[in-house]
Image (cartoon, helix red, strand yellow):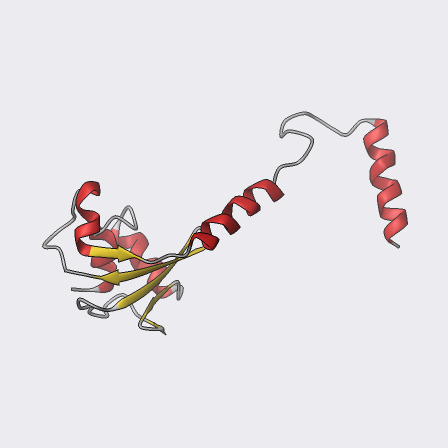
Length: 123
């Protein structure tokens, strides 16, 4: 089975076209090698799928005939992604939180002075 079809059928990508694009961008590795979308995969192959800044590590257990339901995905793959990868994603979410919420408007005079003071100190 083609790698793009496999990733689509085990619900890592919503469409097969998105899975194909991910392969072309080099976000999919099979047994440590970057692959094209037409590469065939077999049971016991090890996959690394880079999606949303997380490297999912998978082992193929079996090949489905077509797209499977979400409850049956674990029959066809074993997820060996370390917990640290998800912890890193949580840290990225917290890093993006600013004290000023989006849509709160322009900075106040005090905010502007704080920003200017910070910029002057760093130089």
